[in-house]
Length: 199
Image (cartoon, rainbow, N blue to C red; front, side, top):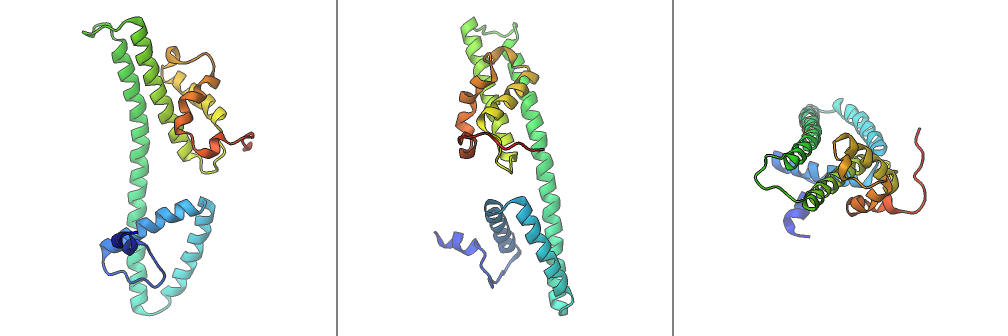
């Protein structure tokens, strides 16, 4: 591990000397926590720390000022995270719209270069495969419980593609979409056994 990466890793008792270092160490620790814990576990840890911080507030004036500054930074980060979430949702919607526009442009009879039937079919199928992988990847990233298996995802993606106007480019059954989305599937999605039913 290089010196700079080691410096940005948080350790108990570590002295933070600048706001930039604080942000760098905080973001790295947050990524490590998200990889190591479930959202429920993080909620418990957060609750414990809030209670601990509240106890510290009754301490010295400097401790109160530090806690207040940390809370302000946390609130600012929460606002930033909410903006990023909204931006990503907008990006997903825009990607679907752009895919549909591109597909319509390919089908437009007034284009200068007219593709043969087979070329058009292959082009449409490639666009459908690409969109299928984007949809599957987004849904698997949102699958915090890691329950969606590849067969279930193929069904979901098939329905989404039909809704987005790719019906003519799809195979006869959702089961055939497994091969399309397999390159973006996480390891748990290909494990044997049925996915757990959720209520």
